[in-house]
Image (cartoon, rainbow, N blue to C red):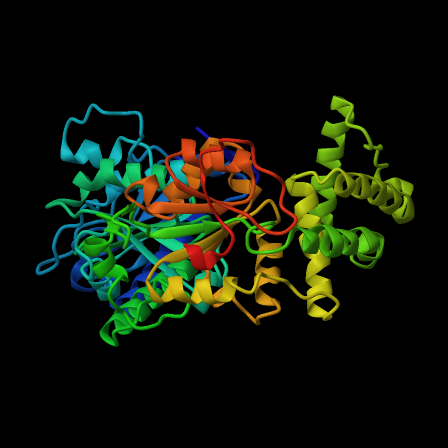
Length: 538
Protein backbone atom coordinates (compact mmCIF):
# COMPACT_ATOMS: atom_id res chain seq x y z
CA UNK A 1 0.00 0.00 0.00
CA UNK A 2 1.52 3.33 -1.03
CA UNK A 3 2.19 5.84 1.72
CA UNK A 4 1.43 9.50 1.09
CA UNK A 5 1.89 12.62 3.15
CA UNK A 6 -1.27 14.50 4.12
CA UNK A 7 -0.76 17.51 6.39
CA UNK A 8 2.61 16.09 7.31
CA UNK A 9 1.19 12.70 8.30
CA UNK A 10 1.94 9.57 6.29
CA UNK A 11 -1.22 7.76 5.21
CA UNK A 12 -2.03 4.82 2.95
CA UNK A 13 -3.90 5.56 -0.27
CA UNK A 14 -6.75 3.33 0.97
CA UNK A 15 -7.21 5.23 4.25
CA UNK A 16 -10.45 7.15 4.72
CA UNK A 17 -8.51 10.38 5.13
CA UNK A 18 -6.85 9.92 1.75
CA UNK A 19 -10.13 8.92 0.08
CA UNK A 20 -11.48 12.31 1.20
CA UNK A 21 -8.31 14.21 0.26
CA UNK A 22 -8.02 17.09 -2.21
CA UNK A 23 -6.43 15.05 -5.07
CA UNK A 24 -9.26 12.51 -4.95
CA UNK A 25 -11.99 15.14 -4.74
CA UNK A 26 -10.42 17.20 -7.54
CA UNK A 27 -10.47 14.15 -9.83
CA UNK A 28 -14.12 13.48 -9.00
CA UNK A 29 -15.00 17.08 -9.87
CA UNK A 30 -13.03 16.81 -13.10
CA UNK A 31 -14.89 13.67 -14.23
CA UNK A 32 -18.30 15.21 -13.52
CA UNK A 33 -17.29 18.30 -15.55
CA UNK A 34 -15.99 16.17 -18.44
CA UNK A 35 -19.14 14.03 -18.46
CA UNK A 36 -21.28 17.13 -18.94
CA UNK A 37 -19.04 18.28 -21.77
CA UNK A 38 -19.01 14.86 -23.42
CA UNK A 39 -22.80 14.61 -23.09
CA UNK A 40 -23.12 17.82 -25.09
CA UNK A 41 -20.83 16.30 -27.73
CA UNK A 42 -23.04 13.22 -27.95
CA UNK A 43 -20.41 10.85 -26.59
CA UNK A 44 -22.17 9.72 -23.37
CA UNK A 45 -25.88 10.19 -24.10
CA UNK A 46 -28.47 7.64 -22.99
CA UNK A 47 -26.37 6.86 -19.89
CA UNK A 48 -23.73 5.25 -22.16
CA UNK A 49 -20.00 5.79 -22.17
CA UNK A 50 -17.56 6.02 -19.31
CA UNK A 51 -14.53 7.93 -18.02
CA UNK A 52 -11.80 6.74 -15.68
CA UNK A 53 -8.92 8.93 -14.51
CA UNK A 54 -5.99 8.18 -12.23
CA UNK A 55 -5.67 10.43 -9.21
CA UNK A 56 -2.63 12.55 -9.99
CA UNK A 57 -0.55 12.74 -6.84
CA UNK A 58 3.21 13.26 -7.16
CA UNK A 59 3.77 11.54 -3.82
CA UNK A 60 2.30 8.28 -5.18
CA UNK A 61 4.03 6.22 -7.94
CA UNK A 62 1.82 6.10 -11.04
CA UNK A 63 1.20 2.31 -10.89
CA UNK A 64 -0.11 2.74 -7.32
CA UNK A 65 -2.37 5.74 -7.95
CA UNK A 66 -6.08 5.34 -7.31
CA UNK A 67 -8.58 5.36 -10.16
CA UNK A 68 -11.81 7.36 -10.23
CA UNK A 69 -14.57 5.92 -12.43
CA UNK A 70 -17.94 7.28 -13.51
CA UNK A 71 -20.85 4.92 -12.68
CA UNK A 72 -22.88 3.02 -15.24
CA UNK A 73 -26.52 3.52 -16.17
CA UNK A 74 -26.86 7.07 -14.87
CA UNK A 75 -27.52 10.42 -16.52
CA UNK A 76 -23.96 11.48 -17.25
CA UNK A 77 -24.80 15.18 -17.63
CA UNK A 78 -26.32 15.32 -14.11
CA UNK A 79 -23.55 13.52 -12.23
CA UNK A 80 -21.96 15.13 -9.20
CA UNK A 81 -18.52 14.46 -7.71
CA UNK A 82 -20.05 12.31 -4.97
CA UNK A 83 -21.49 9.97 -7.63
CA UNK A 84 -18.06 8.56 -8.56
CA UNK A 85 -16.48 5.22 -7.67
CA UNK A 86 -12.99 5.15 -6.20
CA UNK A 87 -10.94 2.10 -7.15
CA UNK A 88 -7.63 0.69 -6.05
CA UNK A 89 -4.88 0.19 -8.67
CA UNK A 90 -5.99 -3.46 -8.90
CA UNK A 91 -9.63 -2.51 -9.40
CA UNK A 92 -11.19 -3.22 -6.02
CA UNK A 93 -13.89 -0.75 -4.99
CA UNK A 94 -12.68 1.48 -2.14
CA UNK A 95 -15.59 3.90 -2.17
CA UNK A 96 -19.08 3.66 -3.71
CA UNK A 97 -21.64 6.40 -4.29
CA UNK A 98 -24.84 6.41 -2.23
CA UNK A 99 -28.12 5.50 -3.98
CA UNK A 100 -30.45 8.34 -4.96
CA UNK A 101 -34.24 8.31 -4.55
CA UNK A 102 -36.61 7.08 -7.27
CA UNK A 103 -36.70 7.45 -10.26
CA UNK A 104 -32.89 7.35 -10.19
CA UNK A 105 -31.40 3.90 -10.69
CA UNK A 106 -29.03 2.51 -8.07
CA UNK A 107 -25.40 3.19 -9.02
CA UNK A 108 -23.36 0.29 -10.36
CA UNK A 109 -19.84 -0.30 -11.57
CA UNK A 110 -19.53 0.14 -15.31
CA UNK A 111 -19.47 -2.92 -17.56
CA UNK A 112 -16.35 -1.28 -18.99
CA UNK A 113 -14.60 -2.40 -15.82
CA UNK A 114 -12.91 -5.52 -17.15
CA UNK A 115 -11.78 -3.63 -20.22
CA UNK A 116 -9.95 -1.23 -17.95
CA UNK A 117 -9.22 -3.48 -15.02
CA UNK A 118 -8.09 -6.90 -16.24
CA UNK A 119 -4.66 -8.47 -15.94
CA UNK A 120 -3.57 -9.96 -19.26
CA UNK A 121 -2.16 -13.04 -17.58
CA UNK A 122 -5.25 -13.94 -15.53
CA UNK A 123 -7.81 -16.30 -17.03
CA UNK A 124 -9.86 -17.57 -14.10
CA UNK A 125 -13.00 -15.47 -13.99
CA UNK A 126 -15.62 -16.17 -11.34
CA UNK A 127 -18.44 -13.66 -11.51
CA UNK A 128 -19.32 -10.58 -13.49
CA UNK A 129 -18.59 -8.34 -10.51
CA UNK A 130 -15.21 -9.94 -9.89
CA UNK A 131 -14.52 -9.82 -13.58
CA UNK A 132 -15.05 -6.09 -13.39
CA UNK A 133 -13.00 -5.25 -10.37
CA UNK A 134 -10.55 -7.90 -9.20
CA UNK A 135 -8.29 -7.74 -12.25
CA UNK A 136 -5.63 -5.26 -13.28
CA UNK A 137 -6.32 -2.45 -15.70
CA UNK A 138 -5.54 -3.21 -19.36
CA UNK A 139 -5.18 0.28 -20.71
CA UNK A 140 -3.49 1.48 -17.53
CA UNK A 141 -1.10 -1.43 -17.16
CA UNK A 142 -0.43 -2.25 -20.83
CA UNK A 143 -0.21 1.36 -22.04
CA UNK A 144 0.82 3.22 -18.86
CA UNK A 145 -2.33 5.30 -19.24
CA UNK A 146 -3.40 8.08 -16.92
CA UNK A 147 -6.98 8.24 -18.23
CA UNK A 148 -9.34 6.20 -20.41
CA UNK A 149 -12.41 7.56 -22.21
CA UNK A 150 -15.14 5.31 -23.60
CA UNK A 151 -17.36 7.13 -26.10
CA UNK A 152 -20.56 6.11 -27.85
CA UNK A 153 -20.24 9.03 -30.26
CA UNK A 154 -22.15 8.35 -33.46
CA UNK A 155 -19.04 9.05 -35.58
CA UNK A 156 -17.09 6.26 -33.87
CA UNK A 157 -20.02 3.89 -34.47
CA UNK A 158 -20.78 4.73 -38.12
CA UNK A 159 -17.17 4.71 -39.28
CA UNK A 160 -16.93 0.99 -38.44
CA UNK A 161 -19.98 0.24 -40.61
CA UNK A 162 -18.66 1.67 -43.90
CA UNK A 163 -16.75 -1.54 -44.52
CA UNK A 164 -18.26 -4.29 -42.32
CA UNK A 165 -15.31 -6.61 -43.01
CA UNK A 166 -12.52 -4.15 -42.23
CA UNK A 167 -10.40 -4.85 -39.16
CA UNK A 168 -8.82 -1.38 -39.20
CA UNK A 169 -9.66 2.27 -39.75
CA UNK A 170 -6.97 4.05 -41.77
CA UNK A 171 -6.61 7.72 -42.67
CA UNK A 172 -3.77 9.96 -43.80
CA UNK A 173 -2.99 13.55 -44.79
CA UNK A 174 -5.42 15.21 -42.37
CA UNK A 175 -4.31 18.01 -40.04
CA UNK A 176 -5.99 16.54 -36.96
CA UNK A 177 -3.84 13.40 -37.19
CA UNK A 178 -1.16 15.56 -35.53
CA UNK A 179 -3.26 15.49 -32.35
CA UNK A 180 -2.76 11.72 -32.02
CA UNK A 181 0.32 10.73 -30.03
CA UNK A 182 3.27 9.76 -32.23
CA UNK A 183 1.69 10.89 -35.51
CA UNK A 184 2.21 13.70 -38.01
CA UNK A 185 0.30 15.06 -40.99
CA UNK A 186 1.97 12.73 -43.50
CA UNK A 187 1.62 9.62 -41.36
CA UNK A 188 -1.06 7.00 -41.79
CA UNK A 189 -3.18 6.66 -38.66
CA UNK A 190 -4.32 3.09 -38.02
CA UNK A 191 -7.01 2.25 -35.45
CA UNK A 192 -7.86 -1.43 -34.87
CA UNK A 193 -11.51 -2.48 -35.00
CA UNK A 194 -12.83 -5.32 -32.84
CA UNK A 195 -16.27 -6.92 -33.05
CA UNK A 196 -19.00 -5.98 -30.59
CA UNK A 197 -20.52 -8.38 -28.05
CA UNK A 198 -23.74 -8.41 -26.05
CA UNK A 199 -21.92 -7.27 -22.90
CA UNK A 200 -18.97 -4.92 -22.73
CA UNK A 201 -17.04 -7.06 -20.28
CA UNK A 202 -16.93 -9.79 -22.94
CA UNK A 203 -14.72 -7.54 -25.09
CA UNK A 204 -11.80 -7.97 -22.70
CA UNK A 205 -9.77 -10.54 -24.63
CA UNK A 206 -10.21 -8.97 -28.07
CA UNK A 207 -9.30 -5.55 -26.66
CA UNK A 208 -6.11 -6.96 -25.14
CA UNK A 209 -5.15 -8.62 -28.42
CA UNK A 210 -5.74 -5.37 -30.31
CA UNK A 211 -3.55 -3.41 -27.88
CA UNK A 212 -0.80 -6.01 -28.20
CA UNK A 213 -1.05 -6.15 -32.00
CA UNK A 214 -1.02 -2.35 -32.41
CA UNK A 215 1.50 -1.02 -29.88
CA UNK A 216 1.42 2.46 -31.44
CA UNK A 217 -2.37 2.75 -31.13
CA UNK A 218 -3.99 4.92 -28.46
CA UNK A 219 -7.52 3.80 -29.28
CA UNK A 220 -9.58 0.76 -30.23
CA UNK A 221 -12.86 0.95 -32.16
CA UNK A 222 -15.70 -1.47 -31.37
CA UNK A 223 -17.90 -2.10 -34.39
CA UNK A 224 -21.47 -0.73 -34.12
CA UNK A 225 -20.63 0.44 -30.61
CA UNK A 226 -18.01 3.14 -29.99
CA UNK A 227 -14.37 3.71 -29.10
CA UNK A 228 -11.93 3.41 -26.19
CA UNK A 229 -9.25 6.12 -26.08
CA UNK A 230 -6.40 6.41 -23.60
CA UNK A 231 -3.60 8.84 -22.86
CA UNK A 232 -0.89 9.40 -20.28
CA UNK A 233 -3.09 12.09 -18.68
CA UNK A 234 -6.71 13.19 -18.87
CA UNK A 235 -5.66 16.07 -21.13
CA UNK A 236 -3.94 13.69 -23.54
CA UNK A 237 -6.91 11.30 -23.58
CA UNK A 238 -9.42 14.13 -24.08
CA UNK A 239 -7.38 15.79 -26.84
CA UNK A 240 -6.96 12.54 -28.72
CA UNK A 241 -10.63 11.61 -28.30
CA UNK A 242 -11.60 14.95 -29.88
CA UNK A 243 -9.19 14.36 -32.78
CA UNK A 244 -10.39 10.80 -33.34
CA UNK A 245 -14.04 11.90 -33.50
CA UNK A 246 -13.12 14.70 -35.91
CA UNK A 247 -11.27 12.26 -38.19
CA UNK A 248 -14.13 9.73 -38.09
CA UNK A 249 -16.59 12.48 -38.99
CA UNK A 250 -14.32 13.61 -41.84
CA UNK A 251 -14.07 10.03 -43.16
CA UNK A 252 -17.85 9.61 -43.08
CA UNK A 253 -18.43 12.87 -44.94
CA UNK A 254 -15.70 12.15 -47.50
CA UNK A 255 -17.28 8.75 -48.08
CA UNK A 256 -20.68 10.42 -48.64
CA UNK A 257 -19.00 12.63 -51.25
CA UNK A 258 -17.51 9.59 -52.95
CA UNK A 259 -14.00 10.50 -51.82
CA UNK A 260 -11.37 8.17 -50.40
CA UNK A 261 -10.10 9.35 -47.00
CA UNK A 262 -7.41 6.65 -46.80
CA UNK A 263 -5.25 8.00 -49.64
CA UNK A 264 -3.10 11.15 -49.58
CA UNK A 265 -5.09 13.08 -52.21
CA UNK A 266 -8.53 11.99 -50.95
CA UNK A 267 -9.58 11.57 -54.56
CA UNK A 268 -12.71 9.83 -55.89
CA UNK A 269 -13.42 6.28 -54.82
CA UNK A 270 -13.07 4.20 -57.95
CA UNK A 271 -12.52 0.69 -59.24
CA UNK A 272 -9.32 -0.68 -57.77
CA UNK A 273 -9.71 1.47 -54.68
CA UNK A 274 -11.11 0.61 -51.24
CA UNK A 275 -14.04 -1.87 -51.36
CA UNK A 276 -13.52 -2.56 -55.08
CA UNK A 277 -9.89 -3.38 -54.47
CA UNK A 278 -10.84 -5.76 -51.67
CA UNK A 279 -13.02 -7.71 -54.10
CA UNK A 280 -11.23 -7.45 -57.43
CA UNK A 281 -7.48 -7.42 -56.83
CA UNK A 282 -6.82 -9.90 -54.06
CA UNK A 283 -7.01 -12.82 -56.45
CA UNK A 284 -4.41 -11.33 -58.81
CA UNK A 285 -4.65 -10.80 -62.57
CA UNK A 286 -3.42 -12.33 -65.81
CA UNK A 287 -1.37 -10.12 -68.14
CA UNK A 288 -1.34 -10.08 -71.95
CA UNK A 289 1.27 -12.87 -72.06
CA UNK A 290 -1.01 -15.05 -69.94
CA UNK A 291 1.41 -14.78 -67.00
CA UNK A 292 0.00 -14.52 -63.51
CA UNK A 293 0.49 -11.13 -61.88
CA UNK A 294 0.14 -11.24 -58.07
CA UNK A 295 -2.32 -8.92 -56.34
CA UNK A 296 -0.78 -5.72 -55.05
CA UNK A 297 -2.39 -3.55 -52.43
CA UNK A 298 0.80 -1.71 -51.48
CA UNK A 299 4.14 -0.84 -53.04
CA UNK A 300 7.17 -0.11 -50.87
CA UNK A 301 10.01 1.76 -52.55
CA UNK A 302 13.65 2.12 -51.64
CA UNK A 303 15.15 5.55 -52.44
CA UNK A 304 18.85 5.36 -53.27
CA UNK A 305 19.26 3.61 -56.63
CA UNK A 306 15.51 3.09 -56.97
CA UNK A 307 13.63 6.40 -57.00
CA UNK A 308 16.74 8.55 -56.85
CA UNK A 309 20.24 8.35 -58.37
CA UNK A 310 22.88 7.05 -55.98
CA UNK A 311 25.04 9.99 -57.07
CA UNK A 312 22.54 12.47 -55.61
CA UNK A 313 22.95 10.91 -52.20
CA UNK A 314 26.72 10.42 -52.35
CA UNK A 315 27.65 13.58 -54.25
CA UNK A 316 25.07 16.06 -52.93
CA UNK A 317 23.36 15.07 -49.69
CA UNK A 318 26.29 13.47 -47.87
CA UNK A 319 28.74 16.30 -48.66
CA UNK A 320 26.16 18.90 -47.64
CA UNK A 321 25.67 17.22 -44.26
CA UNK A 322 29.44 16.79 -43.80
CA UNK A 323 30.22 20.40 -44.69
CA UNK A 324 27.46 21.86 -42.51
CA UNK A 325 27.44 19.62 -39.45
CA UNK A 326 29.67 21.96 -37.41
CA UNK A 327 27.67 25.06 -38.35
CA UNK A 328 24.38 23.31 -37.61
CA UNK A 329 25.44 21.98 -34.21
CA UNK A 330 26.92 25.31 -33.14
CA UNK A 331 23.85 27.31 -34.22
CA UNK A 332 21.31 24.96 -32.62
CA UNK A 333 23.38 23.61 -29.71
CA UNK A 334 20.86 24.60 -27.03
CA UNK A 335 17.75 23.51 -28.94
CA UNK A 336 15.85 20.52 -27.57
CA UNK A 337 15.98 18.81 -30.95
CA UNK A 338 19.77 19.12 -31.18
CA UNK A 339 20.20 18.03 -27.56
CA UNK A 340 18.34 14.85 -28.50
CA UNK A 341 20.60 14.41 -31.55
CA UNK A 342 23.69 14.80 -29.38
CA UNK A 343 22.32 12.33 -26.84
CA UNK A 344 21.85 9.72 -29.57
CA UNK A 345 25.32 10.38 -30.97
CA UNK A 346 26.93 10.09 -27.52
CA UNK A 347 25.28 6.70 -27.04
CA UNK A 348 26.31 5.50 -30.50
CA UNK A 349 29.92 6.70 -30.13
CA UNK A 350 30.22 5.08 -26.70
CA UNK A 351 29.08 1.80 -28.24
CA UNK A 352 31.52 2.29 -31.14
CA UNK A 353 34.41 2.91 -28.76
CA UNK A 354 33.62 -0.24 -26.81
CA UNK A 355 33.56 -2.23 -30.07
CA UNK A 356 36.73 -0.60 -31.41
CA UNK A 357 35.04 0.96 -34.46
CA UNK A 358 37.59 2.81 -36.58
CA UNK A 359 37.15 6.58 -36.56
CA UNK A 360 35.26 6.80 -33.26
CA UNK A 361 36.67 9.41 -30.87
CA UNK A 362 35.51 10.17 -27.31
CA UNK A 363 33.03 13.01 -26.86
CA UNK A 364 33.83 15.14 -23.81
CA UNK A 365 31.19 16.02 -21.23
CA UNK A 366 29.23 19.27 -21.47
CA UNK A 367 31.52 20.75 -18.84
CA UNK A 368 34.32 20.80 -21.41
CA UNK A 369 32.48 23.52 -23.27
CA UNK A 370 30.50 23.83 -26.48
CA UNK A 371 33.50 24.09 -28.80
CA UNK A 372 35.12 20.91 -27.50
CA UNK A 373 31.89 18.93 -27.66
CA UNK A 374 31.01 20.13 -31.18
CA UNK A 375 34.53 19.41 -32.42
CA UNK A 376 34.36 15.80 -31.24
CA UNK A 377 30.86 15.39 -32.65
CA UNK A 378 31.98 16.68 -36.05
CA UNK A 379 34.90 14.23 -36.14
CA UNK A 380 32.62 11.30 -35.37
CA UNK A 381 29.93 12.36 -37.85
CA UNK A 382 32.46 12.82 -40.65
CA UNK A 383 33.80 9.32 -39.97
CA UNK A 384 30.27 7.86 -39.98
CA UNK A 385 29.42 9.57 -43.26
CA UNK A 386 32.65 8.39 -44.87
CA UNK A 387 31.83 4.81 -43.87
CA UNK A 388 28.21 5.26 -45.10
CA UNK A 389 26.88 3.87 -41.84
CA UNK A 390 23.14 3.14 -41.67
CA UNK A 391 22.58 4.13 -38.05
CA UNK A 392 19.73 6.11 -36.54
CA UNK A 393 21.94 8.59 -34.67
CA UNK A 394 23.59 9.72 -37.90
CA UNK A 395 20.46 9.62 -40.07
CA UNK A 396 18.46 11.69 -37.60
CA UNK A 397 21.09 14.44 -37.46
CA UNK A 398 21.54 14.40 -41.24
CA UNK A 399 17.79 14.86 -41.65
CA UNK A 400 17.84 17.97 -39.49
CA UNK A 401 20.81 19.41 -41.40
CA UNK A 402 19.19 18.68 -44.77
CA UNK A 403 15.94 20.28 -43.61
CA UNK A 404 17.76 23.58 -43.28
CA UNK A 405 19.23 23.12 -46.76
CA UNK A 406 15.88 22.35 -48.38
CA UNK A 407 14.12 25.19 -46.60
CA UNK A 408 16.82 27.64 -47.74
CA UNK A 409 16.66 26.30 -51.31
CA UNK A 410 20.27 25.18 -51.03
CA UNK A 411 19.08 21.64 -51.77
CA UNK A 412 16.47 20.16 -54.11
CA UNK A 413 15.47 16.51 -54.13
CA UNK A 414 16.09 14.48 -57.28
CA UNK A 415 13.99 11.58 -58.58
CA UNK A 416 14.16 9.73 -61.89
CA UNK A 417 11.83 11.08 -64.57
CA UNK A 418 9.61 7.96 -64.54
CA UNK A 419 8.90 8.24 -60.81
CA UNK A 420 6.23 11.00 -60.70
CA UNK A 421 4.11 9.41 -63.43
CA UNK A 422 4.28 6.01 -61.74
CA UNK A 423 3.30 7.48 -58.37
CA UNK A 424 0.30 9.18 -59.93
CA UNK A 425 -0.71 6.00 -61.79
CA UNK A 426 -0.54 3.84 -58.67
CA UNK A 427 -2.48 6.43 -56.72
CA UNK A 428 -5.21 6.45 -59.36
CA UNK A 429 -5.34 2.66 -59.15
CA UNK A 430 -5.88 2.85 -55.41
CA UNK A 431 -2.51 1.27 -54.62
CA UNK A 432 -0.86 2.74 -51.54
CA UNK A 433 2.82 3.61 -51.88
CA UNK A 434 5.27 3.74 -48.98
CA UNK A 435 8.96 4.60 -48.74
CA UNK A 436 11.48 2.46 -46.83
CA UNK A 437 14.95 3.95 -46.62
CA UNK A 438 17.91 4.01 -44.28
CA UNK A 439 17.52 7.80 -44.29
CA UNK A 440 15.31 9.23 -41.56
CA UNK A 441 11.60 9.72 -42.17
CA UNK A 442 12.23 13.47 -42.05
CA UNK A 443 14.89 13.19 -44.76
CA UNK A 444 12.53 11.10 -46.91
CA UNK A 445 9.74 13.69 -46.61
CA UNK A 446 12.17 16.46 -47.52
CA UNK A 447 13.43 14.68 -50.63
CA UNK A 448 9.94 14.04 -51.99
CA UNK A 449 8.50 17.32 -50.71
CA UNK A 450 11.18 19.45 -52.40
CA UNK A 451 11.76 17.30 -55.49
CA UNK A 452 12.69 18.39 -58.99
CA UNK A 453 9.09 17.50 -59.92
CA UNK A 454 7.45 19.41 -57.10
CA UNK A 455 5.82 18.05 -53.93
CA UNK A 456 5.26 14.32 -54.46
CA UNK A 457 4.27 13.56 -50.87
CA UNK A 458 0.59 13.67 -51.78
CA UNK A 459 1.08 10.34 -53.58
CA UNK A 460 2.77 8.65 -50.62
CA UNK A 461 0.91 6.98 -47.76
CA UNK A 462 3.77 6.68 -45.29
CA UNK A 463 7.48 6.44 -44.58
CA UNK A 464 9.61 3.76 -42.87
CA UNK A 465 13.20 4.12 -41.72
CA UNK A 466 15.66 2.03 -39.71
CA UNK A 467 13.58 2.41 -36.55
CA UNK A 468 11.45 -0.40 -38.03
CA UNK A 469 14.59 -2.50 -38.42
CA UNK A 470 17.72 -3.02 -40.52
CA UNK A 471 16.97 -3.14 -44.25
CA UNK A 472 18.87 -6.42 -44.65
CA UNK A 473 16.85 -8.23 -41.97
CA UNK A 474 13.73 -10.25 -42.77
CA UNK A 475 11.85 -9.19 -39.65
CA UNK A 476 11.92 -5.55 -40.83
CA UNK A 477 9.82 -6.45 -43.86
CA UNK A 478 7.50 -8.63 -41.80
CA UNK A 479 6.93 -5.62 -39.55
CA UNK A 480 6.19 -3.38 -42.54
CA UNK A 481 3.69 -5.91 -43.95
CA UNK A 482 1.95 -5.89 -40.57
CA UNK A 483 1.96 -2.10 -40.42
CA UNK A 484 0.40 -1.50 -43.84
CA UNK A 485 -2.51 -3.79 -43.01
CA UNK A 486 -2.45 -6.40 -45.79
CA UNK A 487 -3.90 -9.88 -45.37
CA UNK A 488 -0.81 -11.51 -46.84
CA UNK A 489 2.79 -10.23 -47.22
CA UNK A 490 2.61 -11.19 -50.91
CA UNK A 491 0.20 -8.27 -51.42
CA UNK A 492 3.16 -5.93 -50.88
CA UNK A 493 5.64 -5.24 -53.70
CA UNK A 494 9.09 -4.09 -52.59
CA UNK A 495 11.38 -2.39 -55.12
CA UNK A 496 15.07 -2.01 -54.29
CA UNK A 497 18.47 -1.98 -55.92
CA UNK A 498 20.22 -3.91 -53.13
CA UNK A 499 20.41 -7.70 -53.49
CA UNK A 500 20.61 -8.39 -49.74
CA UNK A 501 17.48 -6.27 -49.15
CA UNK A 502 15.66 -8.16 -51.89
CA UNK A 503 16.59 -11.49 -50.29
CA UNK A 504 15.37 -10.33 -46.86
CA UNK A 505 12.07 -9.01 -48.25
CA UNK A 506 11.44 -12.20 -50.23
CA UNK A 507 12.06 -14.29 -47.10
CA UNK A 508 9.32 -12.25 -45.37
CA UNK A 509 6.91 -13.20 -48.17
CA UNK A 510 6.89 -9.90 -50.08
CA UNK A 511 6.92 -9.72 -53.87
CA UNK A 512 10.28 -8.23 -54.91
CA UNK A 513 11.57 -6.43 -57.99
CA UNK A 514 15.17 -5.23 -58.31
CA UNK A 515 15.78 -1.78 -59.77
CA UNK A 516 18.52 -1.41 -62.37
CA UNK A 517 19.55 2.25 -62.57
CA UNK A 518 22.68 4.08 -63.79
CA UNK A 519 25.37 3.86 -61.12
CA UNK A 520 23.85 0.92 -59.25
CA UNK A 521 26.01 -1.96 -58.11
CA UNK A 522 26.13 -5.22 -60.04
CA UNK A 523 23.87 -8.11 -59.05
CA UNK A 524 25.17 -11.64 -58.44
CA UNK A 525 24.87 -14.08 -61.30
CA UNK A 526 21.63 -16.09 -61.21
CA UNK A 527 20.16 -13.77 -58.58
CA UNK A 528 16.67 -15.00 -59.40
CA UNK A 529 14.78 -11.68 -59.17
CA UNK A 530 12.73 -9.85 -61.76
CA UNK A 531 14.49 -6.60 -62.74
CA UNK A 532 13.31 -3.30 -64.21
CA UNK A 533 15.02 -0.24 -65.65
CA UNK A 534 12.02 2.06 -65.16
CA UNK A 535 8.91 2.18 -62.99
CA UNK A 536 6.91 2.20 -66.23
CA UNK A 537 7.72 -1.52 -66.46
CA UNK A 538 5.81 -2.28 -63.26
